[in-house]
Amino acid sequence: MPEILTAPLTVSFPFTRSLGPVQSAFLTGLRERTVLGVRTTDGRILVPPVEYDPVTAEELRDLAEVAPTGTVTTWAWNPAPRDNQPLRTPFAWVLVRLDGADTALLHVLDAPGPHAVRTGMRVRIRWAPERTGAITDIGCFEPYEGEEHAGPAVPHDGVFDDPVTGIVTPARLDYTYTPGRALSRHLAALAEHRITGERCPSCRKVHVPPRGVCPTCGVPTAEQTEVGPHGTVTTFCVVNIKARDAAIDVPYVYAHIALDGADLALHARIGGIPYDEVRMGMRVAPVWTGDARHPDHYRPTGEPDADYDTYKELL
View 1 (cartoon, rainbow, N blue to C red):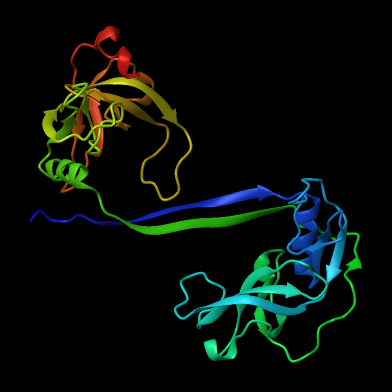
View 2: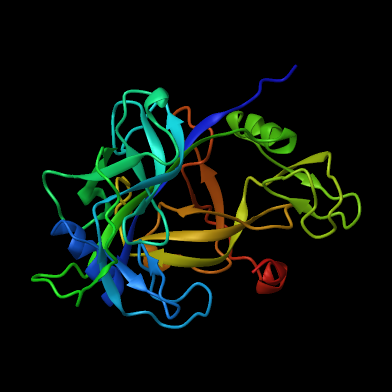
């Protein structure tokens, strides 16, 4: 039985957004221990606030302050917190309808165990010791024995000193990737410094890397064929912004390369030549370093440039 390949992968980037007047007031209010909602045209108070009515799509700007206490409307227990979650000890995810609000806010509840959590229980905000104008300024919710605040939400002008106008949120996805049959055979060949594709039984095109199905005809592919290793640069771009933690100095060239015998161009970095000398039609070959499975980059072979008509269909 062939080895089942797996690899841990992480996709992460900082998500930056500017804030409009409603979100700016909401996050700045949290920094000042004030929870703001927004009033809809039919009088409902939405917390957290939104800029447009979810029913009528009308623009909303009428802010109102609600109480820091509320009622749990539903919950789920988290026995094993992950990195960067609000609490390091087991906690409950809760939807809390704050007193004066008509919708529920998602956050976490600090409780000794699931036996201490129930729908309908009273809770209050535990503010973070240091607040910067983010949802994490609410450190968590905690059980509260007081009664529901009976008064309505209080109108608020949303004006604060030094308002928060933008936020940067790190987005991250960790997962384990398992390639299918076709790509596993392709990766096994790469470990031997060979590049393979699969030929479609209908259109007879060779696709690299193979996916087990022809992207044009939609039929399964199984016939393997070796391609390259030489290829032709079909088009390219010059990268001038250095990626975080990348060891490659800028500027460098990333190109689409049509390997000999392939009917689909793959993308790879071009090295061994100044970035401003890379051109369409340039003939290149892969360069492996160490025990890497994939080529580190492609370099010029010194062959004459390919005629445009030989690769124009692969642009």
